[in-house]
Image 1 (cartoon, rainbow, N blue to C red):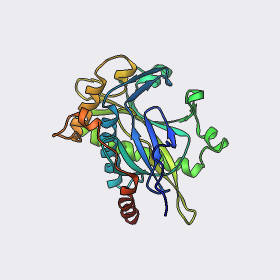
Image 2: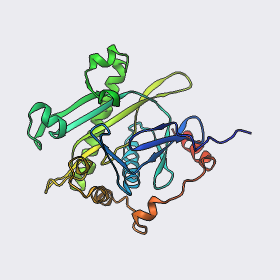
Image 3: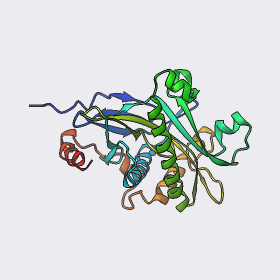
Image 4: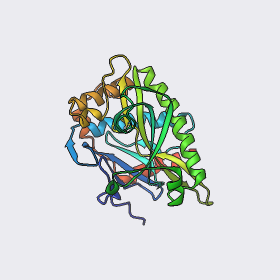
Length: 275
């Protein structure tokens, strides 16, 4: 009899998430932590409930992208901290889409923070903490074999499409999507076909979100810049998106139990038939 995956052995642990084996070899369980980091892990803290909020927000946004046919790794939420995702071969790049000058972009180019850019700008960074995630151009990416030219084209197209859609979602709840980070992976089919899918998360950890009227920040900059109220800001984004449960507190949600991997297998099989 096939033994279920060992949930006690993480496959990967990053700054804000842990990846655990899923109920079968094609899936992973993505666990959202309460850890907050900035400046390449030089600034660290724990913010109670952050992982729960990011899980709920990311679920909503990824499901919304799935609804418009944008391929991504999200399958379904397991509990208040975890979601089931497809296992992809990750591309070691961060794709940053900028709509408004802010953060390092404003400093690098001397463009005043808050300046609305004449068009969305897409940047690439090598995902490597030891090198502080340096910016890279398309020539670097293809020369070092990080991604093929056609994969870059797909990543650019998916990023701009996601940007247009997400801007609309946030505009409808009074927020401006200033910029955000995306990550992608390769989905490899049994017949050898390879396609690029969106992965990771979309949350206030990976987006800059400003109130359209007051310019109040509702994102990780509250932690980076010691503005305080990080949990309240993330909670407000979840509230505006209407993804916070009305009948339970965040503290109770944070303690939600994790179902056994074996119980997920029927759901995975059902989802695989739909794709």
